[in-house]
Image (cartoon, rainbow, N blue to C red; front, side, top):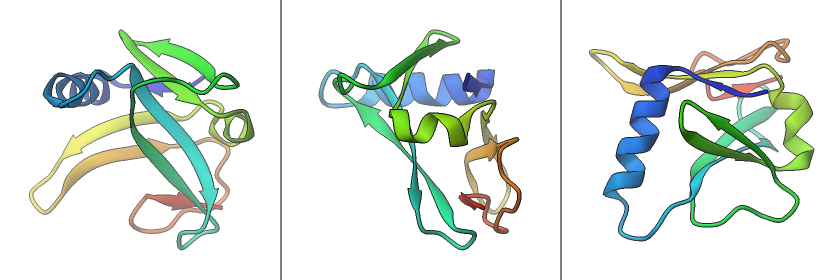
Length: 106
C-alpha cells in the first residue's frame, strides 16, 4: 500500500486541476540511479498502464508499475513547504539507506 498525506493529496489535486490535458492520476515508480542506488519517479498521467497496480488514496488515484510495488510497499508520500525548498518527500520503510536530498534510496 502507498500512502499520501493530506498535504501530498492536496498538491496532486492542485496539479491535476491545473493541467492542460485530462489527468487520471499520479504515477509512482522506482528506477536505478540517484545517490543511493534507486530513485523515485513520479508524474501525472492521463491513463494507467494495463499492468499497473491502482491505489486510491485520499481521493487520488496512484498508479504503480508491478516492478516498483515491492520497493514502495508502505511508503508515505508527503508534500512539505520550507524556507529553502518545497516538494514531495518519501518515507519508505523498505529503504536501508537514503541520500540527503531524500529523492533516492538504497
